[in-house]
Length: 137
Ligand code: HEC
Image (cartoon, helix red, strand yellow):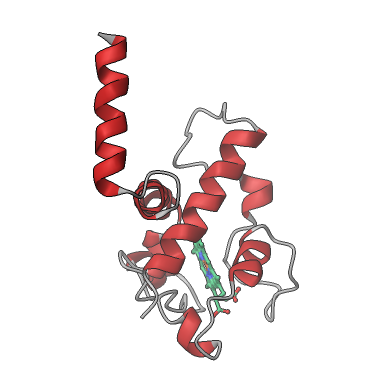
């Protein structure tokens, strides 16, 4: 059974000719990242990253759209900036901004009972960035 499965995967890989070089795996990370985004970011930044999500009503600062990051950055997705910003490693324009420091609070809604270790979190953040990159205009 196991052998059969392996053969099947091998054949699909040959047909798609893409198993090792990206598109298929990337689609998975984007889907995983969307799950993280939906739980941790969508309330403020909108379901599709369009900004001003439902939680904005309670905030003084309107959360900006995240789908236009690339456009606002000369057509280049600022992956490093987003990563550092989300992890609270960049100084904010407004120190009282409601944007959480995720390296401090963790992914509270993905793991409501805690329990995610460093590597899991790192993968989640990488997937989240893949998702954000995928939704740029
Ligand atoms: C409680 C609401 C809230 C949540 C939840 C939230 N943000 Fe934010 N975010 C904001 C606000 C408000 C700003 C604008 C003020 C600022 O720059 O701090 C912002 C700014 C940003 C910026 C900077 C955008 C720019 O154009 O400079 C990025 C990137 C960002 N958020 C990503 C995320 C990601 C990714 C998540 C989920 C992991 C998230 N945010 C969750 C409220 C939120």
